[in-house]
Image (cartoon, rainbow, N blue to C red; front, top):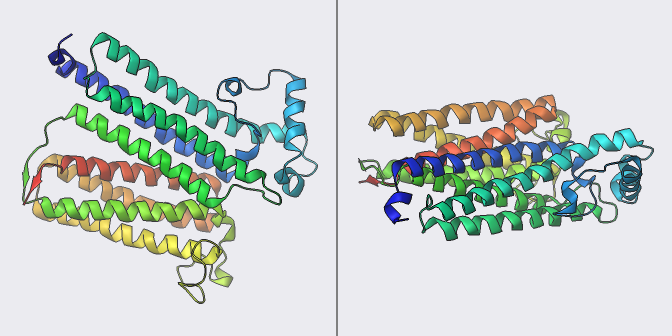
Length: 343
């Protein structure tokens, strides 16, 4: 079919909707992964079987074999000694759902990609790019196993925080790439916004600061920072630990939490500045609405972060993580709307 058919408004809407669904699935994946990590379920499956592993244990014998394998790793021996099969199943299912959701995302990307390409609904220039994203999604699965395998090291009861960070930011790259592509398919021509170039630069700065704060957050999650909160020892209270900043940015618990909080404050100030500056300059409604949304989300994010730390509730911590990703997406959408900004 001719290129104009693929670029028709109807096909653009269809392709954009598909990509928005995929971006939504990645966002849900972040929540599943966050719960899996914070609940300690991530080490309950001791092998990486991309095909066979799509099926859970189907009988008692399969369950017992998997449980016996789990008993050989340090997490069981150091934390869960004496756990019965019922307790193991509670650990197993979050990790299984996490992996199954990842496989489902691969199907949701690949099957429509082939279908749209064959029927001429997809612009040819997008096919190699989306094919690359599928390959990177598979690589993300391998990185996930690379992360999980570090939890099987002697005396280890959790994955290494830097591998957790690598896995998380692999997901963030895929999410941003899919979302930006979807927004571009939906609105291929940048809207011109005179006088907004400075706002665009400020939004980019806020985006980078948020990424840094999220990087710090992955290490807080990696060390179970919620459990470490201790006002009596000034851990998590917003005060710099002794000898900061030379106190161990990747090894000292108090320093890791304080650095995340400090970066979060910088990101919050930058994002709220974006919102205020946008309202003051009275840009077009799409830019104004996007800036208002990021302002609301960053306030919510700050409240969720404090609540998660003080309450020590895993569910609140997972919501905090998911809202951070939502905030990142909102900033990305604002940047997309500002891509045609001029001085």
